[in-house]
Length: 278
Image (cartoon, rainbow, N blue to C red; front, side, top):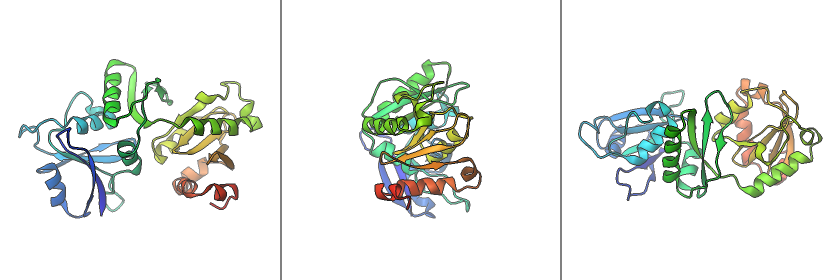
């Protein structure tokens, strides 16, 4: 069985999660109302399924599915729309089978109640944000699209959960207690030093994108890594507000061990982190 995010055309009908038999293609067709077409989505990697002939049959535009398409696959932004019901599954696995919709996307669409829009401009790795906090995922996606179309330098946009202020304060205090991070001057280590990642894959991408300055910080969910060596690869790892590990991530990512290690970190209790028994 796989879990799909089903997106009805009627905006009065809520999106829902639905269990589907992995090999029941007829069930996929029944959801979208006809023959299937699929396009890839990114950040996190997933797949959007919809009616292949929806526009030819003059089905109504699915505004919410179109918003997902335009934010998660910028090649379609302003160029195409989804007509009729749609659903999201994960990418295919190494056997060619569909996987469940990504947990990070499910959390964003069904559980997050405070969201922000972030923009990445051409030539930059970092994401920029304003102070607006939105309570509804679809409104946040609409604002992301408006911003992307209005700002010519915007390369990508995304919607992310708002970072809990108390958690960021705990990370900042932990960084300040580290003598190397505390001494960062170019730039200094501040409450604005933390950049969120939407998935483990994005965390990997960010950690290896450059030779980061000391004090550079990335987080995924409630896991935070702060660079301790200027231009190096030695990250202070914090979870539950506890700095519990120093990690060289390059070899772990190169050998494919980083993802599993992050999952172990996220599954560990505070006591396990403190005792290094994760």
